[in-house]
Length: 98
Image (cartoon, rainbow, N blue to C red; front, side, top):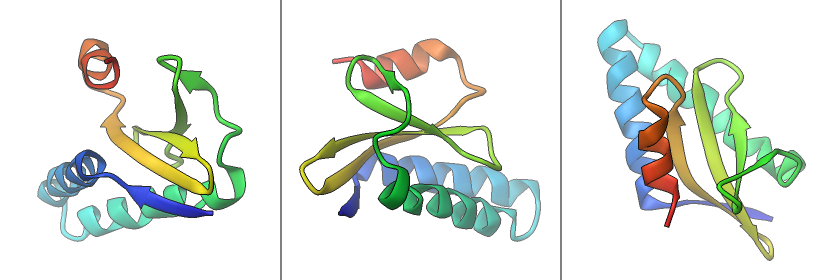
């Protein structure tokens, strides 16, 4: 199995990093370390999470209020979005629906 973080999800991670770095020194680094740890856990637990929007699995981060939306295609886990759960749910709907 391998993990592929798509461009949009990378942008989400950078946006979260910038937000938390403004909150406190090195908090952005802690945010990225935590989220990448959650993402790495998909190598063991990918596919056990609930499905949302009829096509994306959703993993909730353990330390931050973020959700990781992913799909499994063969031996690849594709990370499509890493979204802040505190945002307006309509933004998440718009982002993940076709």
